Image (cartoon, rainbow, N blue to C red):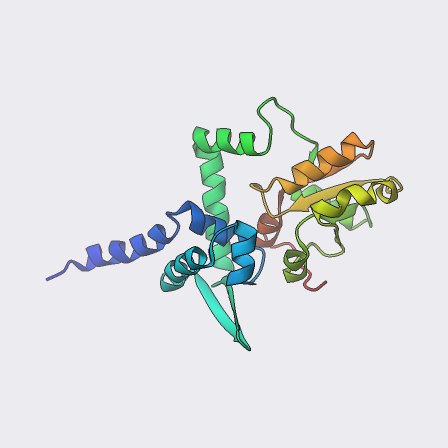
Length: 221
């Protein structure tokens, strides 16, 4: 006869195993921004369609993602805000407790020489927004912005930022944000603007943490 207690932990391990793949975590990271098709995920993650489909099936069998059909297209999304919160908690623990994760993240964000840009906390940004400032720049791709963004934020994907520098010089204060604490786009955006003499800060983390910590989210282009 099987041990009921053992069965509980076996089922918990199924959920843990779903998070036990770098590729699946990358897909979860993308889905935390909003629902996407397999094609869209494959392009964003630079993976093959069959690879993405296989990883999504693991996540679906673990009840971490859900789907909806629109015509011939199938859209994937995280099963709920609790899944995003679980992912957020895992990122926080990993960054806090693992020196290896910290070193890898610093290298990815190009912080090896202490080259950190100015940051602003979520609480500070929320307070400034009540006074109608600053200009908040969402430098993620357009489909992620449309799926959910900080209310009043302007979408200016990183690839288009250089052409808008002269216009941005007129702004008194700018805060850039992207997907989350593990996203490089906001760091690079602030570096680009600073290099052009435009003062800007980056949000301490990004859209994932903004959402999971209960701040308001606006949907639509």
